[in-house]
Length: 317
Image (cartoon, rainbow, N blue to C red; front, side, top):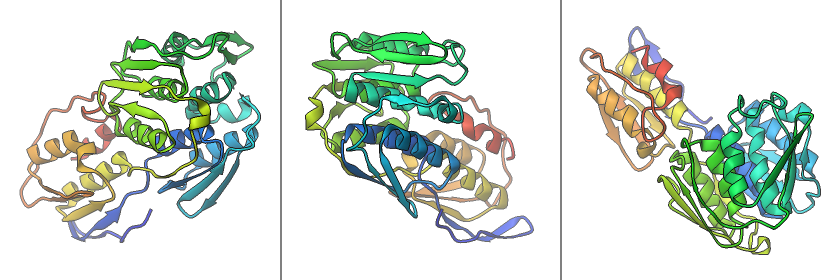
């Protein structure tokens, strides 16, 4: 994370400019999507955290070559020859399930160890499976390993998700890009990270529209039409919101760079209702407060509602 140190004296921030890191929840899925590129993809603005290292190990075990230079990853998936992920890595990070969709899209098959063994429903993987089954995927579970096959190939389908699950939307999206025909995902997750994933898939040659809304449509293309790309990960909206809360606490001004204000529109609305002045630019948000803070009601909801992961920070105000 590139930033200037925020200088605080008493309850007043004398200065504060910060640039947020890339969004972890986006970078992990972009890494998984690189499996569909069958070559060397570059992903920029990647945070330096342990989850990224674990996902790199997962891709390495599949046969990819992952290299990091600062906040930039290069991932060569040309030599990936395995569709099985090891339990000892998947058990460390739940997001590893996101390789399921791209492995199915690339090989028509996947063997993914399940965190928590066979308790699929308890792990909230059921919506992933229902959506993928609609695309022609068949599943068997044996000793905590999920074996996916496509006996009749992948085909487009119209799927209505029971809940706008981010993970289920992502896995369906990454499988659907190589499915034959048209796929529509209704009640899809609308998170900015979904839109970021769709932008990378489109840069790879996929045909995805509607990402960021509750209806995502995909026109499948042959796997051979997909290729590597160079993509920059979006900024982390939760990290950005955390710094904005810091500015609200101290009075600021605190300016957060590297974030689309639209990602935080509900949080910004609440900050204004609490008595803060909030200015927005194309990729920055500035918060200032001169008067007292006011109490507001907050209800967490899926995006574009108030983010659950920001609730604790706002409780400090």
